Length: 166
Picture 1 (cartoon, rainbow, N blue to C red):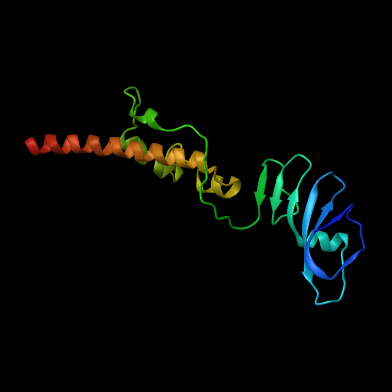
Picture 2: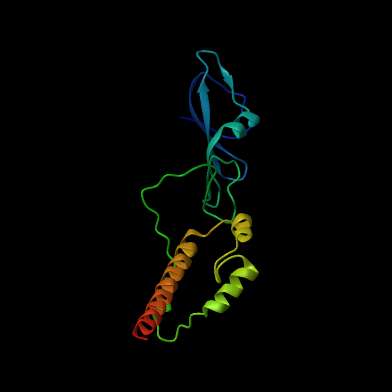
C-alpha cells in the first residue's frame, strides 16, 4: 500500500491495490487503484474522490462506500451490510406487564388508527422514510406492541369464558 501525503499528487501507479491518502482535514482515505495491465495510472484529486473505498475522519467517524460520512454517526455505510450480530443497547418493554400499566380501550385504539394511520407510540411511515429507523428503539416498540397484544388476547379470552358460561 502506498502512502501519499496529500490529495494533490500526480504520481502514477500500474500495479493496482490501494493508496492511503491523508487529506487536508487530518483524515485518511483508502482508495482503490485498478491494475492497468502495465500502463501507469494517474492518481489525482478527482480520481481519489471517485475511487474512495474507506474514509476515516479526524474525529474517528468512518465512511464505507461514501466520501462524506454523516457527522451525526461514527459509522456511515453506503451499501448493504451483513453482520453476524448487532447489539442495540436500549430499554425494554416489560413495563407493559406492571399492574399500573393501562391499555387503551379497543374503541380508543380503533379511533387512533383511523385518525393517524398507525399504532400509538409507533413512528409513522413518513417519520421512518424521512429519518430512518433506530433499530434498537423499533425493536423495543415492537416488543411493547407484542406484549400489549398478549394482554388484549388475555382480556378477550376472559370475555369468551364469561360468554361461554352464559
